[in-house]
Image (cartoon, rainbow, N blue to C red; front, side, top):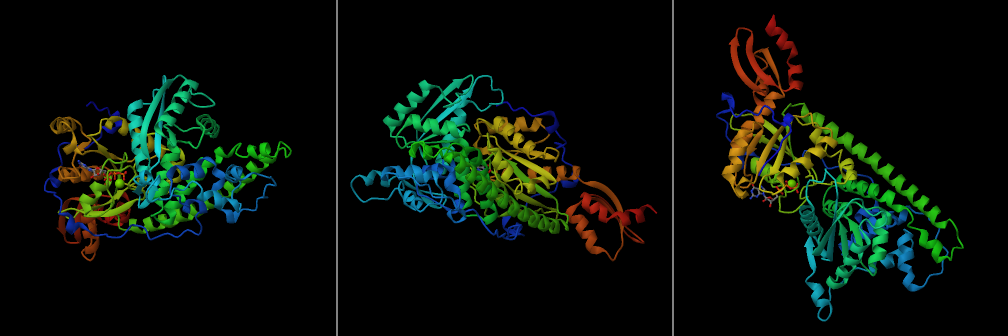
Length: 561
Ligand SMILES: Nc1nc2c(ncn2[C@@H]2O[C@H](COP(=O)(O)OP(=O)(O)OP(=O)(O)O)[C@@H](O)[C@H]2O)c(=O)[nH]1
Ligand SMILES: [Mg+2]
């Protein structure tokens, strides 16, 4: 496999590890657990919008309720919408209620599509389709996947088949059963239906033949396209896009996490929802026989205003969480242990690496987006040096921008790190494309200036580990490891230390004898090259973190005089 790396990434991770680190080895995990607690105290938010707490048994039902007919998102308690004076037949209630959030009839429709386990008869085959996902039982709906390759799209490096494979993994993570897929090459997407009319007809036949319940598109679709496609496919089939699917996975996973994280996901869902509120209400005018002109327009405005207010309130609360976390981090930084963040594509093995090095028990599994919130643990090496290692949420190609924005506060951990370790699943056929996708997100987060070290993980799983290792040796900024079996972890720690040294400053200071504690801290957080005992104190020559160097300024002057 050929891997490309931009010039700036070929940094200073020397193959010639400096002699002062040659004796470093890793202490067995059991003795490394220094910080069994999360780095942040639990944060309480005053309010999480009601919709994030609503759960339904059927995934696609949730997708549709939450993401497509978004007005249902708004908490009924917050609403003072005028009830539409429309005489509707029983079967029309569902459509009307889907457009009118918070009416009494909504409760009725919420229950409508929920599947109930039946004993015997018709329900028996359905029984096998109830699966446990993210700690919850969900009905495994049949999903059909659609991808479009736009001609001349140079950014699209994944290839349509691979992107579909990843979409299938996402669908599986969300609890859907993929029964088929199709793709189309287009020069420009169709404005109304995204795909061409022939493809629409082809998918419609597949829906009938395979009993499809949900059609998922690999790209973000507009509200109009989603609606037109649903209409074209007819029946009960739902249509959603990749972004909605990712948001749904985050929503499912966030349910068991702290409130601040749920609020981040809620915010991302609302941001996705806002532009998709248009024309949701036009059916009201149709059902009123066109007698109440402008009614739909008015309702959209009301909904948008409510949603904007909720977004504003949520942003405000998240800002206070941000400040809270910042204060906590500042306190942590008063002991200047360098912070190293693990970043990378989802499923690359970041959490497995953190667990290996620190004896922690962070969830690591063969699923996408196993980790949602950062975990920081202390890594101490045999030579007494230590650094803090932070595990972060994984990235993915076509990561919804609203998710990146919403997680910005959480990802501040990354921006305040001394070093980013980019973990790559080198056994993956698209490792190179995944590296590019991660770089893209890192540049969106504006952290490209932080020193980086690349780690090729899962070497044990690669078809030709020896070849990979030889390739890595040729590069200056790559370390090969297997987080699963522990191979290469000594080299990894040495490389981290070397990289950290690059970000430190050289000091020569005379530390008075009565400041023994300070001397041991220098040994702990810095890289001491030499110590000399003099009449007036200990002369130390070391690389230390910038913040710490400032503390030593008076002693540096003392040394010069
Ligand atoms: N063979 C092999 N499997 C590994 C290795 N490292 C991790 N894995 C497996 O890869 C899967 C994903 O590992 P995680 O540690 O959860 O990956 P992650 O990067 O934290 O994933 P997200 O939290 O989704 O971003 C798990 O099934 C791990 O057991 C490795 O070195 N070799
Ligand atoms: Mg993880």
